[in-house]
Image 1: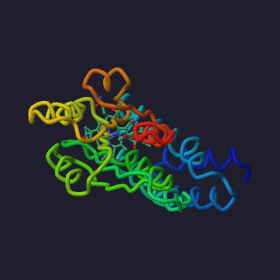
Image 2 (image 1 turned 90 degrees about the vertical axis):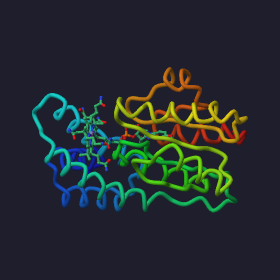
Image 3 (image 1 turned 120 degrees about the horizontal axis):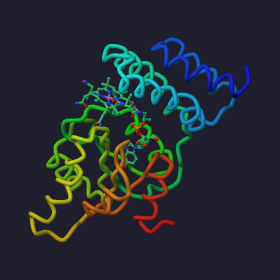
Length: 215
Ligand code: B1M
């Protein structure tokens, strides 16, 4: 099977909500030596994006979206496990999670895997996380960066709430903040006063390094 055929098989597996085929495509791609992030970005992500578009256009419904997400989760687990770990000293501590009211976590999990692979110590709080939890955990571990992810336009406010929490407490900011997720933009980050915005997992690593003065 060629590289392009594997990407196509990955995309098709998600489009057909087929967890077994997704698992097979992920394993096959890695066995063929394809870079895990390339397999994700050229195979699986276009697949789940297509399902999202179908959902928005009313040609696929929630049960199918859930099945596609499950197939995506299985592929993501296999791919994340294959991202080679960085053996250098830890670069910095990042507390990360999906904001309150939002249970989307596939993209955030990819970001976590790539940050870890690049030597960051990452505390993944999971999904549907209230602002206070981010702040508590960051205090607990002495984080350098708090990262928030959101996929719903209605929950983007959760990212703003975090920035406002600092102002309200009258505290000088102790941590840098990074925001991401499909509806998030640089403009939104600027508007709410976040320190960085990243479009994808690779950029999240780049921005985290910049925030800590490592590049
Ligand atoms: Co939902 N969903 N969903 N969904 N879902 C979207 C987001 C939607 C755009 C679909 C659509 O209508 N086209 C739409 C939102 C519309 C809007 O807000 N304007 C939507 C909706 C409406 C809903 C429900 C309300 C549906 C319903 O119940 N009627 C519901 C909401 C539940 C809730 O959260 N309260 C819902 C539920 C679900 C599932 C549970 C079925 C499932 C999620 C499963 C899971 O995550 N465990 C799901 C899925 C899978 C999607 C789509 C199809 C795919 C999301 C995804 O995984 N993308 C999505 C459509 C779409 O995005 N095209 C959709 C792949 C992933 C790799 O990309 O998450 O963007 P992404 O992450 C990227 C970057 O954004 C970035 O890096 C990642 C890797 O490159 N990034 C960061 C992400 N976080 C970052 C953090 C950073 C930096 C970068 O720094 C901290």
